[in-house]
Image (cartoon, rainbow, N blue to C red; front, side):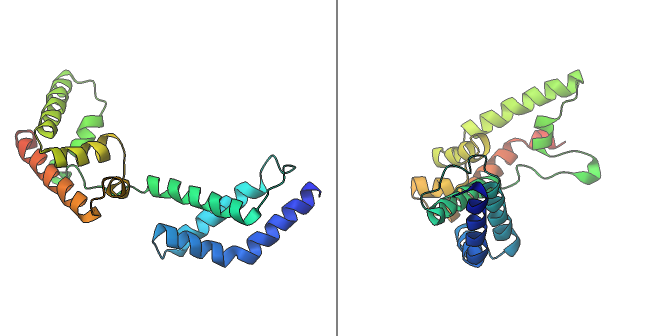
Length: 181
């Protein structure tokens, strides 16, 4: 079978199964947004059709496509983080959020000292949290894990993890009141 006829058969499969593939993706991302499902299917289709190794036969095209969609959905869900803002911005006073203050790259000595003190205070506040709250904050904020991953791994409901993080952030904010001024 030539590379052209392989691409044609892949294209035929994708056209005939398009609706089913989109429904599969939408079910995986637990979202009714047509755009996201369509985008993921189109991305996988484009990658499949532009493969450099088209001479290598695909044993089961259907299984290959569904597995590719599953992997793409996992990537999509990882990029879509669920988070609670670390600190709100005081736009009227010209102050940025705590996260902005941690990342700001100004070379002003006074700001650097304040930033270092702020970091130390944040880490101390996190360290003083109860273990269950500290674990959620560390895993979501420092290790980049999602609440869904933690919920599945720790066998704790998603709402419980969200509540723990919310309480933890409130305690950290309370300990950082001196920096508000």
